[in-house]
Length: 408
Image (cartoon, rainbow, N blue to C red; front, side, top):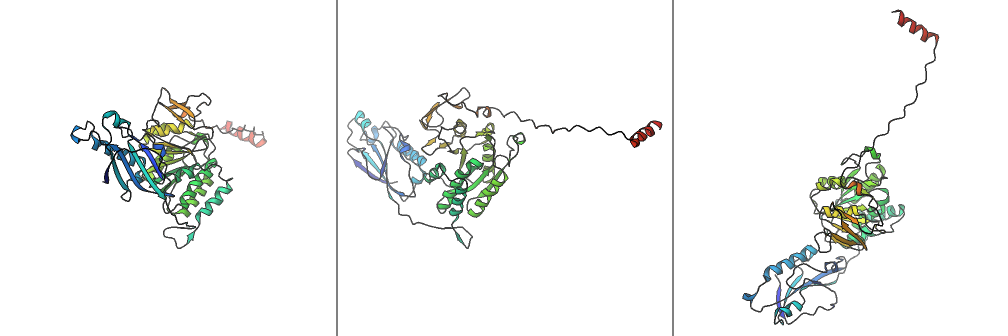
């Protein structure tokens, strides 16, 4: 389990190459969980120290089940970062003994110290694709594609994957409509540059219906959804170009739910589902959200003017999480998704009478509200234009045929 050591008192001061997480006396939840944002490409964890008080000194006088509390603290730590559950990390348990009474024990620090060191990486210029005889720099192809789409002014998706190396065996559902090409391609770029360590295993691209007119997009059957395994980068690049040729989107709402469901049906062996979403678009089939029974990690792109509540509600309904370039917001946290009120990017949201989040500042009406509680009214297919029938010119032959008919 690890080394036990008794100390008089731990002083929670700044420690080089370490992050201090606080539980609090007789508590197991991590209060400052946002402080741990490891970049495992640059660091490796060496030690984890769990600090708590040995009070009362005699075990038979404990009124708190210390063993259970300790297990809960370790469990919360592994929920925060599963990569810490590793036999290569040295765990230590430090028991503070210089507490004479209950009030002193409450004043002591109780928490976890994670110590790390810099990782030495070998730079790899090329990516070797399994079952291939040729080494190909795929990232150059993706970089060229991003440049052809006007470049990438927002590195949201790239940076989020960079700070979450613990995501393993991921199914990435990607909005592949025209405004999202650079964002989505940056995910493929990140995957190609981190091929040997990337947790991305499957892709689903959706373009909201292969250029169908809006009236033809029925709920759950809009179409334009395509799949690829992530281990064949050549096929991934070919596929996203093919999906691009089939349709570019164009409507204000898109078929995110349908893409999520069909992606999970195609690759049911995923560990986590990650949606790369367009913050400026609505979810046309939001009413299908109850069909999704796994947490959805939503990466929102283009959030300069605040996040779209539709995707906050998607994360809340699935007990998932929301990720922007600045922060990660999880469900079931004291200040996270699921609370009646939440602040994201400086904007306050609160739940309405239907249990859905809306902005409370009144500055922006939620354009996506009409898709939340019922299916949108189907668009009526326009009737084809009826051209007037030109009158038939009366000829001798016509008159003769009419006369024959009357004489029968």
